[in-house]
Image (cartoon, rainbow, N blue to C red; front, side, top):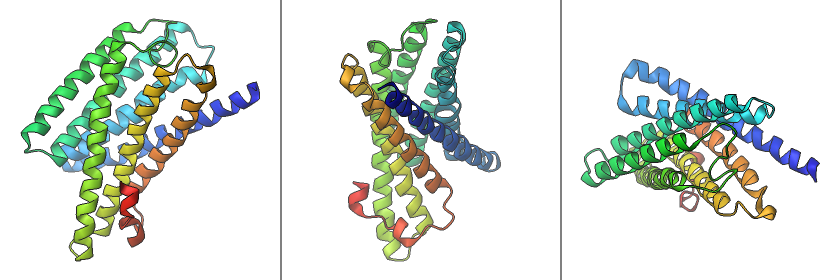
Length: 258
């Protein structure tokens, strides 16, 4: 039993590490582009990947890799990771608003409301963390700040997924007329896969928080998060490193996008 649990934890760490590496590599490459272009889309998406998926996740993984770490040191890693991740989420919110709906009043309102909730949830979470204490929703009962932050992410990552697949569908129609670049069509599809996988990670986190007292359910969220971590890593790589996007990939089936 312990051997099986250890294997699940090991594979889970591999999924997290794949997610971290993909976020840092892709985010770093886009950040280099942003330094040349000085454009908001490249800057916001690169900082989101670096801060949330790269640095933030890496900091939170360190205590898992070093279980004998001093409680206060582990607390500092988790706190710094949480702050970095929330900053990264905010940059993703900005990216979705300014890239997809920059002139829509409702989109601006949605951005400011969800970002405000994210800040409130993030600050509340940071204040509630203590050395040696539980992590709300993970090792202890979820609190209000956990749900406020997570609810904000639910909304915006679902929004990002919708916009990505919506643009993919529109560009597919243009591609059929020879008016779109197959590489760009593929980028929107794989970016949609990536954001939908992250959305599913938030759903999995919510279910884990609700089922925290069920021993039989304990290992399932770890397995699901691992699989989704690999999906995010792969789709990010395909979205930003399209060596040769074949027409089959660019014209992905509509049912896959849905």
